[in-house]
Image (tube, rainbow, N blue to C red; front, side, top):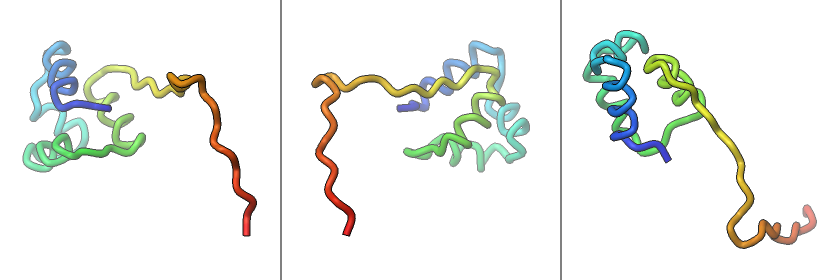
Length: 77
C-alpha cells in the first residue's frame, strides 16, 4: 500500500517540492494535494507519480503466507 508519507519521503529525498511534482503531472497544487490524498491509486496513476518523483515503481506478486493454496474454482453457469 502506498502511504502519503512514502510519497513525501521520496519527493524530499530527490529535492523536490509538491508544487514541482504537481507541475510535472500537469496539475495545479490543489489538485495534486487531492490526488495524493486518495486512498486507492490505479497502477497508471502510480506510474505517473513515480516518474514525476524520479523513482521506480515495482509491482510484484508474492506467495501467500499460508502456503499459497488456491480456493476451488466453481463451474461457470
